[in-house]
Amino acid sequence: MKDPRIQKLAKNLVNYSVNVQPGENVLVEMIGSERDLIKAVVEEVGKAGGRAFVQLTDRTVLRSMLKYATREGLEAWAEIDLNRMKQMDCYIGIRAGENVNDLSDVPEENMKLYNSLYSHPVHSEQRVKHTKWVVLRYPNASMAQLANTTTETFEDFYFEVCNLDYAKMDKAQDALADLMRRTDKVRIAGPGTELTFSILGIGAEKCSGQKNIPDGEVYSAPVRDSVNGTISYNAATLYNGVTFENVKFKFENGKIVEATSNDTARLNEILDSDDGARHIGEFAIGFNPYILHPMKDILFDEKIAGSLHFTPGQAYDVTDNGNRSSIHWDLVLIQRPEYGGGEIYFDDVLIRKDGIFVLPELEGLNPENLK
Image (cartoon, helix red, strand yellow):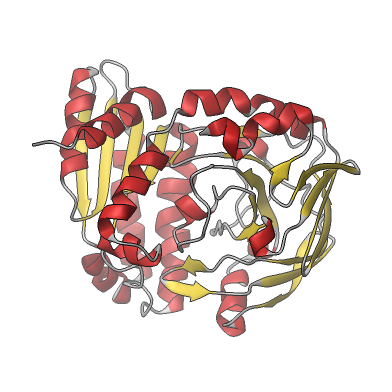
């Protein structure tokens, strides 16, 4: 018997997130072994009149490919997959890996080559800029372990988060997006954090289920050279299968001039990938009411209620500050009281304190109004 929650999710992905139209090509990519959602998505694409193309990838096989990758091989791989992506109108990416650390022993130099020669042209440049796309995780035992809960409990949480009323959330985001578009100076304060920057003229974009599931953020980007001060992130994060904790950055005129963490050497290796990796490409405020604690899965963690993320690397075209990089690493700071609290100011006006929006026009984004 089919789980009706899976069919509902598939219908939302196809008809709301990427809005498949008759005759459109849709690449459905699964990294992992889950099949029920793939089948449901393919069925919904067919009902919408689209044409589904399916890519199934095993992360352990990907690990072996990357361990022995060469520049020439990665360039050929990218050329093949880039040609396919150029023929797609929509992309639905589903991730359900069994072990989040599967890529942790791939040489760092190989990962840099993979990010710059494959991921950047195929995904950052082509998929993100030229298709209607959405990316999501799918619940399994590995995700439940990261969330410190049982598999069944996590599944219930997952479908509650992923199948919420995103159309309602979309309307509630209008006020924040409009305010960010009018804002010049941003100040972020909290334990170990005192940061200022400008977002004047950059713009702001709403995220309400069209690009990520789960969702719940509004994002912009700092004027590239305007960032000064210090930020101390309090959510553990994965990058290329390696866990980083207690990441702290010091900025001078937009550039990360000092970076520390539980693995400071490796952190700085990543930030030295290219010049843009030491500048920020995204500033976003998260507010999904059902996501409260980090689980080392960025699609969930960056949407945590009362959080923000401040992202080294590539900027998005729609909020472009000119920063270019082969990386885009969302790092999360939670400002609810149990995580130390904190404030966000726009042009010297307090807009959020301890994770709760205090301006009347933004109160629709507080948890009690989104559930």
